[in-house]
Image 1 (cartoon, rainbow, N blue to C red):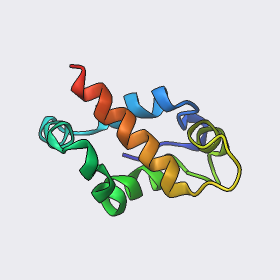
Image 2 (cartoon, rainbow, N blue to C red):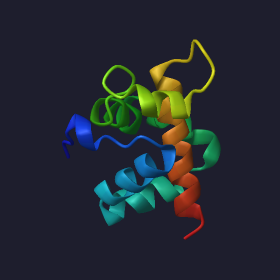
Image 3 (cartoon, helix red, strand yellow):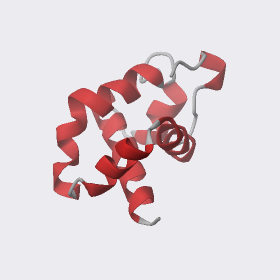
Image 4 (tube, one colour):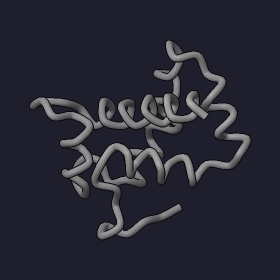
Length: 93
């Protein structure tokens, strides 16, 4: 799902809501069933999708800063913050 720059999520919550809504029910179940310690294995799949779709870091510095408020963070760190937040939200359903 492509989004325009003007519609990029600016907060972690917006990014999580967009991400979850873009996943199929099967994909939501898969994410929900991954053990927390295995979330890092999604780096090259879901993480890449998040970085590309949400424009992290260059096209969407607001979301990058929300995910990584400290200096010298990496885009991979930002996508992991979103993955973990989405995973936690799915756990609470």
